[in-house]
Length: 136
Image (cartoon, rainbow, N blue to C red):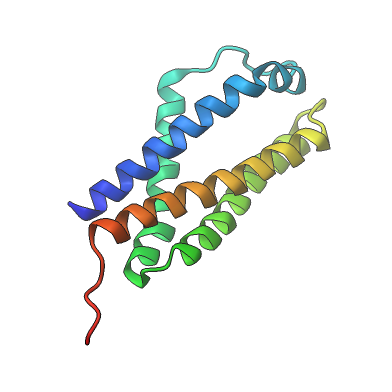
């Protein structure tokens, strides 16, 4: 039950933060991604969020909760976010004409920060729900 709670925390925080971020910068993103799909496919976006949330939970949150370290969760989340978003952003940049380095920098920064924040949030929830007993 604990892992499901942590996964749901990651999924919800990641999904909500991405929706808010996209709403704030959607017109800028559209200018950066000129000839790409303009209408997002909601089912595929949810699938993507599910896969990424699972990865963030499995590789970052679960070990950090076990270590009782929000710092570890945030740092590892940032590293996973940077690596994942770098693959996506530089893949776009190397394959599609019109993708700017400015877009790569903004999206890569976003991916790093959102991953760190969501991981730290989920680790905080995990520690609060299941603190380790400390010997006296």
